Image 1 (cartoon, rainbow, N blue to C red):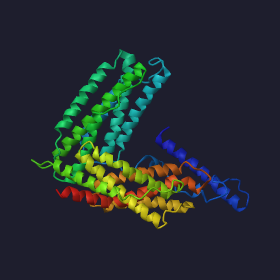
Image 2: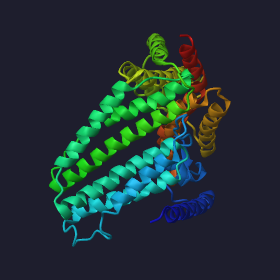
Image 3: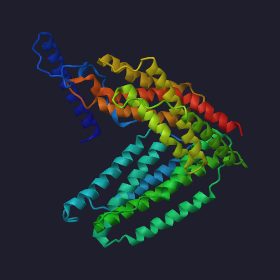
Length: 435
């Protein structure tokens, strides 16, 4: 089913359900409704007809997509697309039982080929260059999986040359990582770009290795592993090259600036952690308890990510996110103490809570003097909204208000993060500029 057909089907289903609910509401007024409350007779209930409409794209796409502040060359994207097409061209079309008699294995290969084609489509419509890179990496690994698997059946391909290819790429990635220079003129921009390079090189040198017992599928997995490793290395090198080309000649290094800022921010975060609010009663499973408990857990566990970051740039960016979480905890705690985080008892209130979360993301991005740094926090907030939106689509009829606790908590979580992002970014910038 195409995306367009699937979306049309979803809309039709929703309209039909809403029509039934509307008729049921009329019957209820007349005293003859047969719809039972999921939550029983006690506690508030909410008619899902009155909940926010969640469109398919809102379930699938973050409203704040990740990006990197460097121009990526069209030729790099073209080369990745051509690589995918070349790999897919090695497969017979269609790949049927005559080519691969085993139906289980054949499905793995055909699904991978389909995923590769989908990745090409996703890259074409990606909203940022970074998202396009991610889609093309997935397309490359899926296409190589299918091509390597077919290579076993077609010409007796073994895992040995693929393991050798993987080892060579890992060695090249280690060398690139050792030689990497943290050049830059603007420390904020440098931190954001070097973070992506650090992470890409780290992933190229720390890939999960195949464990498939089937010989053919094991070779297919070695193919995708070798391809994905090469894709990460290629993207990191390209990003480094494009960033270097955008800088003035003889620009200096920012390694010391990044390292000093990371240490200063980490010290402040450790101090702030001692002021975290105490754990609340586990029996108090309200949305306010859920969001505070989750933020506290993230704050307590996040410090290790900064201390063990793959490089100084990643440490700074992770610290910025951690500062936002700590400030979000303060906001949530203040709202709890003011009794503002009351479980909603009607659909209109849920609509308002959701809209507030979306508005907070937009306002934070548009009002910040450091939008790219703020964006790194807003991407996480956007994922919370996506999870909350998906949760709303899982219910029909009249439900207990407590059924929506998880979604409500995620909306509040996103709102608090978004409203804390600017202040966190300001502190991070001050640390970078104090060197």
